[in-house]
Image (cartoon, rainbow, N blue to C red; front, side, top):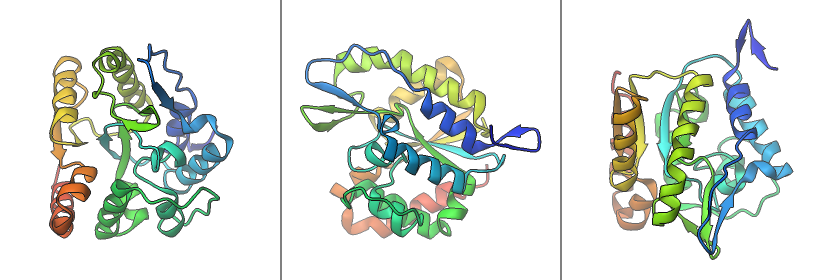
Length: 232
């Protein structure tokens, strides 16, 4: 067990959470779970990343996405981090196919504007309402895009949030939600019932920005930085 003094490090808590993910979901026809942590190479990359940036007991602010995509967190084990950004920005070499993910491209523009990977990950921990991803017939699927999956995922999502909050040090006053629509609405509803955080601050989802507002990427990066650096 990695400790700093008598405290469990953030890296140990995060990796332990991911190691023990074992959802028992009734998956609709054609739907499959993406769990990169069962792959030896992806697990090694996740270990390297979290031990590099989170091997301390410093408290972070949580940022919740939707669920990992198959070209980013679904293969590297690190949310919004595709193999390209993992190597070029985080300094972690990997043999994964160097396919870019749009959301990763935007998030790392924010990371750069914030002051770089060390500064950003010192202050934030990116997770997701569903820490594991889904595909339907080989295509990315959000947990809320299928009514059956959403219904069955909700208890799992609640438990995942509770598990993370019980071991990963965070300020319970505020967190951020990537997605101002359905993801935020669901998170707000769950938070109203379970009181995870005092406030959830929504941000436009990176995928939405890169698909529909690409000419205004710099404006959205500035918006993110303003929101993330607002005194809490």
